[in-house]
Image 1 (cartoon, rainbow, N blue to C red):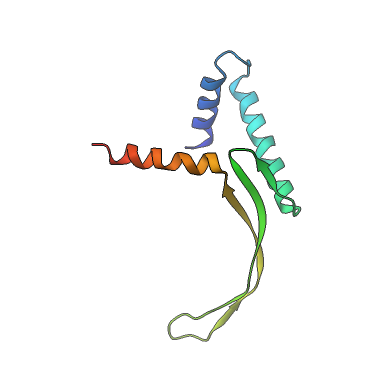
Image 2 (image 1 turned 60 degrees about the vertical axis):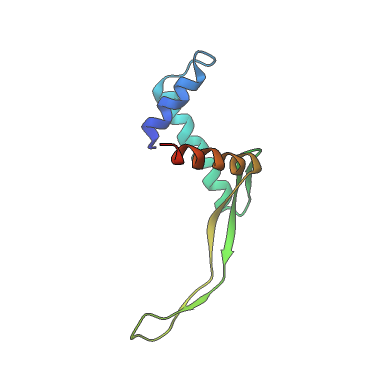
Length: 102
């Protein structure tokens, strides 16, 4: 799903509850995502109940060896990490059941 499809789904779900144009929905999505990114990159976590948590996570340094080359040390670094919430995780068997139906 790209951002255009997401805007369309949000508009369908709002269904008259909140009147927003496509442009207003797009601005809201952009501001929301930028806020989450800014918060996580500043070292804080963002938690959405029943959805999940976005947080910074430190990856340890590792030694990597390509065939026929010298070992290379990949330095430690911070990466964004998402941990799905329990409700989100519990919905995954529904997807698997849908995929198995003929």
